[in-house]
Structures are given as structure tokens and as C-alpha cells.
Length: 187
Image (cartoon, rainbow, N blue to C red; front, side, top):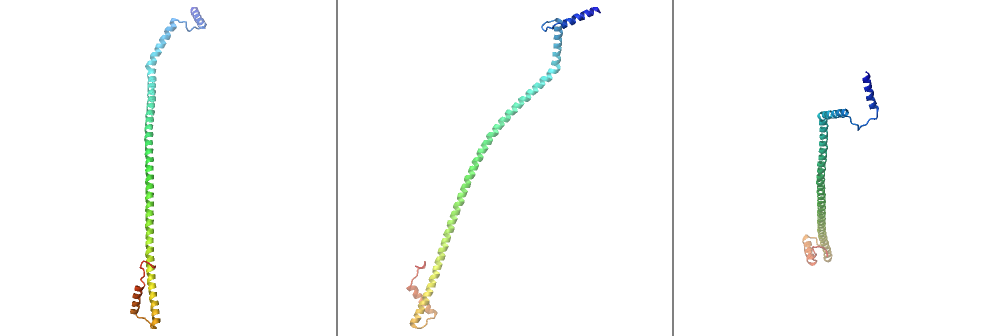
């Protein structure tokens, strides 16, 4: 037991001495290399495949996200171009509709002016006819009055009364020849 105690003390003294990492000892290096290779084998068999698979899947998701973003950006750019074209077309259509509206308004205005002018001419023609009719009535009235005055004057001169219808007709014919009145109106 003594021997074991001595060996153990030497080993503890070496360990208590200042450790040197660069001090290579064959036994420590061998076991370090064996443990490293074993760990590498275990990791490569069971840990690296899932880690690498996860990394590859993540890379693929990121790439797909980038591709989707690029595709979405391209689609947005195409939609923007389409939307601008539709907006320009809508503006053109709006201008055309406004122009058609102006033309329709001008046409309605011209129609209204034409109708107003026609109505005005009709009113003037009707007024002219009414004036002509009134002047004809006035002429007839004046002729009747003239006949009555002529009969009254003749009966005073003759001191007899003319009352028969034939006498009135003769006086009317005489006055028509003696006093020709204009049919279009009173002069």
C-alpha cells in the first residue's frame, strides 16, 4: 500500500504543479485522439445528418421565400403597369364622356333655340293673323257704319226712309266701289 500511496502522491504533485497545455504526453494525446475520433463518429452518424438536413431545409425555405418575394415583386410591378394603363384608359374614357356630354348639351341648346325661334315665329304669325282678322272685322264694322250713315244721310236728303234689304245692298255695293279698302289692313 505504500507503493500505491507513493505513486498517487507523485501523480498529485504533478497535477498540482503548474499545468502546461503544450506539454504533450503520449497517454493523454492518445486518449484525446481516441475520444475525438469516437465523438466525431457518433456525431457524423446521428447528429450531423439531422443538423445538416435542418440547415438544408432552412436554406431551401429562405431561398423559396426570396423567390416568392421576387415573384410577388414582379407581379406587383406588372399589376402596377396594368393599373396605370387602366387608369390612363379610364381618364381617356372620362374625357370622351365629357366631350359627348358637351356635344349633347350643345345639341339640346341648339334644339331649344330652334324650338324657341319656331315658337316665336308661330306666335308672330298667329298675332299677324289675329291682327288681320281684327282689321277685317274693323273694316266690316266700318263699312256697316258707313252704310248706316249713308242710309241715314240719304233718308234725310230724300226725307224718306230706306229700309229695305235691296236698298242696303245697293248702298253697300256703291260704297265698295267708291271706297275700295285694302284687305291686308287699314291704311
